[in-house]
Structure formats: structure tokens, C-alpha cells
Length: 563
Image (cartoon, rainbow, N blue to C red):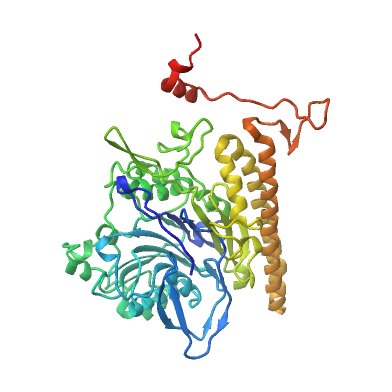
């Protein structure tokens, strides 16, 4: 699979060591009736590229090699099935989407000798084998039961055109095989989220018609079932001494991933910030929980948004530095004179014997890739599923619509086009990083220019997508092969448009902001001196903000004060 090294960023404060963010949107909560999932794959060593597994038929007896997604380590082999589905990134040809965040959980359960299925393999193998969210839960559960679980605690987001589920699991540790888990369907009209902290607390248990256990896993296909769990999820915890209470009071997250300050401030706070954008009135009361100040004021697993969410609303949920809250990363002195909402590592640090932190927001500099998927049940599957894909930081990336039925990924997103240590002039990852890293030097000014291009392109892409949907859906009914060719071409063209515009954007920013000056321009045209058309008008040279000047004086005022 792919390498994703999850680094320890919050060691001093006990923060979670993993770094991804998911939001889950049911069709009743979306403006167009699609289900949506998000994912930010955050790692300081992950290269942003769009994975692709073409649909295939396999001879009887074929074995599948399984490699750990994080490291590329060979874990073992499992029997391949006769037919596997086309998978583009984290969505397949049936509009099934799976994303994840790692929460780790109890350390004694992290290792399981001989286990073959790591969390990344579970995602991408399941996408090749399942058509619906319910099938995906069944496949994931059976793979872990049969081949063991080779990762620490995980939260999975799973969606098809009709339903959205959250599934949380953790391995049984050494001496036992597989994992214990709970899966819950998000009620239609609600949204959910998770960010490296387990979130399922208590849940309906057997005896309820809407609930099944792993002993009757086939029954998950019954539409009335909205909760499923491993038969050992409570008994295993009791056997190991993790839980001693009544079965009815059992909470998955409180047992297997006990919350602490770091998990709230570094993880739950991201979910809270996204929920704030969807319905401030519903979650403002949980700010003390998100800050880690009041862990008893637990935020709900799901909420109802104040209005139905568009795909751009959901993109905005992924673009956040806690602006407008007490954790706003643009306001303290660490943001520098130009309000850069990023902090370099380490995230936890000590000064004069006291512990401090840098916030960990949804938008972060080390994102390899991110996406927002849409599963749109009113369209043919290869056309209805769209992954809005982008590389680098969610705040400054440009999301490009890629149909789930394509047969070839766009060149700028293609696997093997460069790497994290190999620059490629045709790679989206590298050009988006060039723009963003330059923007760090004068963020409050440059981000305005970046967002102009970002907003224009994303809105244009959506308009073009909707118009193209109608055209290609009609063709698909009579000539599906030609329609697939067309959506492949469309996706590639939009990706190339984004790539070319981002190259131009980098050049524009370089010219406009060279040497700390800001050239005067209007609609991308630089004003000249009026004497020489190759000489610019005198550039703006805005002073440092008062807060920053005070910090300089406080630090070295005697040395730089005029006599």
C-alpha cells in the first residue's frame, strides 16, 4: 500500500500522536441529498497522490500480498476474491467511501503478533470488495476476525449514497486474535466527526431489534439495524480489567481510549471547531470541553446542522485554525507579524519549568492529501461518486472533482509522479507546497490572493460538474464505455487546470511580494511608474503591527532605542 508515518507531536502534554480529521455528512443534512465524507491525511513524511486500483478479475487460487500502509512492511497473504472493484483514492465505483483517524487507545492492545490486516489495508481491500456501507462493515469485521488486526485503535468513516456509519475498533493485543468494535449508523439529518480520539460512548445493546452482534453479522444487511458490535466488546474489557461496571453503562471510548487533556485539546477540539461552523448554537457550550478544561462536559457524537450543508460548506469545515474562538491561532505572538496560523514542531514545550502547547488545528502544514467525497444516489454509480481531491494544507489547497469511475488518474495526482524526497515539476503536491510555504512568510496578505483563485476555481468546477453530470449520465445509459472515457478526460482536464493555475499563482505571488514589498496591482495586472512600463509603481511597505513592535521592544528595546 502507501507509506504514512504518523509522528509523535504532543509528547510533553500527552497529546494524541496521530493526525487526521474526518467529518461525516448524512444525505438529510446535505443541501443536494448526497452523503459526504472528509479526510485529511496528515503526516510529515506522507506524499500526496491519488491512489488507484483498477477493477479486475482474478484466477481461482490467487493470493493477495498485504503490506502495512504506514511503513510498506510485508504482513502476509490472504486469498484474493474473483472480482475486485475500481477504487480511486478512498472511493470505489459503487460510491462507497471509507476514511479514518487513528486514536491509538490502550497501549497494551497495540501489538498482535502474526496479524495481517493493518488499518490501511482494511480500507483499501474493503473498497475493492464491498458495494455498500453495511457490506464494508461486514468485510472489515471478517478480515480482522480471520487474519488478525495489526494496528492500534481506529475510527472509520464509512458512507454510501444512502447511509453514513462510524465504526470504532481496537485490537485484542498479544495472545488473542482480531479486534473488538462498535459500528453505529449516523441518523439521517445529522453530521458526525472524529479526529484521533474515539467518540462512541454507550450504545444500544442486544435485545433491541435495531442491534446485532458479530455472531449474527449477516443481519447487518437488514435495513432496520442501526448498531452492530463485536460480541466480546464488553466481556473482553471485563476479562482484561479495563471495565468493571454494568454492561448497560459500558462506554467504548471511555474504556478503550480514556480521554485526557491532550486528547480533548489536540483532537476533540478539531471536531468541535467543525461543528461550530455547522451549528454554533448547538455546540458553543462545549468550548471548555474542547479546550480540555472540563472533560465531563462531553460533546455529543452527532449534531444537527443549522442548515443543510453544501459541498463548499463541508470544505470550509476542513479549513480551520480555530478562528473566532479562544484558541484562534492567528492572534498570539507565535503567529508572527503577519498572522501565520501554523506552529512548527514540537507541539508541546517547556519554559521555566511549566508546560505549554501549540494548538493542533484541522488545517495543518503537514497534510499529504485531503478530500471531500460526495455519493449521489440519483446518478449512475461511476458518475454519482466524486472525490474532491487536493494536496497539501486543507486551507490553501484547491479541491478538484474526480469521478469515482475513472480508469486513469490525472498526471499531477498520479502515483509515482515524484515523492516526498523527489521533486517533480508536474506534481500537484510540489506546486501546492511551493505556494503555501511561500505564503507562510506573509500569510495575512498572501492568503487573500490564494483564496481568490481557490474560490473561483472550486465554484467553477462545481458548476461545470453539475452541467457535465447531465450530459454524461444520458450517454451512460446507451454507451457506458464512452461515458467512462469522458469522465476520465473531464477529471484529468480539471486537475490540469488547477495545476496550471497554481503554477501561475506561485509566479504571481513571487512577483508581487518579492523582498517584503507588496506591488500594487489590480485584477492581476501590476501598476507601473507611469514613466517606464517595466518599472512598477512604488510598492506598499506596510509597517509591522503594533503588537509585534511591542514584542520587539520588550525583547531588545535598550539595544535598538534611538538616543
